[in-house]
Image (cartoon, rainbow, N blue to C red; front, side):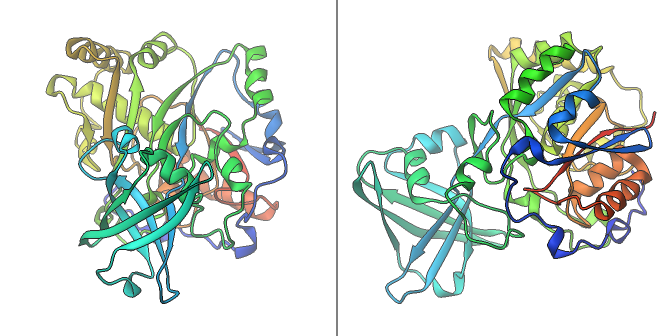
Length: 400
């Protein structure tokens, strides 16, 4: 890693009117910037198959966005917004299965208006009245711990689905609409747990996926639960001082076997979340003998210039580790921060939306493209591309 990285070098002027406030009527009608080893062409997303190499391997994130934003109204009329980030003490699946109470780390909007009283929200599930109670149980620098309670024997997944709303990003300056419940999900969303969408996947449709078969392109899924930290701004000039958020990912043994069998192909990550998962998998394979399940923010950079296992061997190590533990899935946590100087191990091509100035996601793109990230973003700004979550996308084939 270049210790002289200054986040100001990754700033650019993003006018408000270039931030997409709504999705286009059709997912695959969005624009696609095709960067191919220095050359740029403009496409429509439904033409992405023309840009992908034959006989390649795509990796998608099949996480599903939960209705993590819950609004309560006090007797005084004050509105309190609770944004659920992650459960406390248990995994996401067990938290969703809970049928009477569940404690979560949360962000709270209008927190100064909420003292120590228990908040109550009335809502319905299948036309039956339900009350949801929220009680503050702790506070730290990043938010609050809040215990939810309810009656009726419903799972917290059902409670959240009916009491909450789609957690649109803070740069979308409008109220959530019913249509966001569908459009802020990928068509292959399956595993609940994210508070933000893996937005590169939002452009894919069943027709686009079916079109992959004509080029002998295969694909598979990992799951990384996207946290609100993905929107956390870089408030320090020195990249080293920024604390990266940690996210949970789950990868099936069958995926690792498919990845191993397709290692000779071009591996295409759909979105930065897929990139972080794949690269974290490589390092977990390197550290497999230590039974590590977490990848810390900067630890891999100490090994970047050392003799390291080939990607195939790292994945073999992971598969062997799962077999020894007698499990069919790997659940890990990563706050790996990918910045210029990082050497990619498992990603050859990237499909991604356009990201905020001075953000960790833009740093990742820069690490992948080199200085040409400026060329890509200048072209997008000059040619009316739409930015951020509901915006357009790019496919990046880096220079060798």
